Amino acid sequence: SQTIHQWPATLVQPVGSPLSLECTVEGTSNPNLYWYRQAAGRGLQLLFYSVGIGQISSEVPQNLSASRPQDRQFILSSKKLLLSDSGFYLCAWSRRRRSISENYGYTFGSGTRLTVV
Amino acid sequence: QQQVKQSPQSLIVQKGGISIINCAYENTAFDYFPWYQQFPGKGPALLIAIRPDVSEKKEGRFTISFNKSAKQFSLHIMDSQPGDSATYFCACHGGSQGNLIFGKGTKLSVKP
Image (tube, rainbow over all chains, first blue to last red; front, top):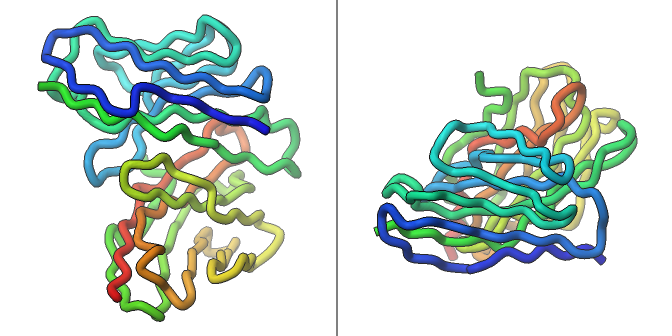
């Protein structure tokens, strides 16, 4: 079975410090990978997605970046955190949808609560 | 451009009542419509999904109603329970769009 791991669960970082959040997927190969951010009581904002190693698409320009050094590893980074980077960060994966008859669902990790102080 | 419009933003229902959350979409190429349930501090989890070739899908107390001509679909939670209190997201996928398009979410509170 497939599992997704995301860590850490909570993180408190000072403004201007670097950030590295890691996500790994087990039990599948060549997944699509996603990073979402969720502000308190708000919806899901897609930050980055990746369809393969080294292939990153950015949805929202910001001081965050993402990398995919291995097939099942997705990393979210920042060189200098801002107060506005606080939020709930979610990693997700999905299979490639190969036909219209195939279901297409995302599996989300348990999230990282980031507080920038 | 908001491709998926979800309403209401929040909903309060008494225990035993029916909770109804609605979504409307623009792109007729969408062909897969899931609902996700998110509890506080957790990631969203797939609850139920429907394809446009059926008008209704039921799983336990959860039912999706789908109206292709109106480009709308809704989630009905029968006999709502306090444990159903969560945020619910509708989503759409299909056509040339590679990613799921999520609605903005509905926070459901079921009062005992």
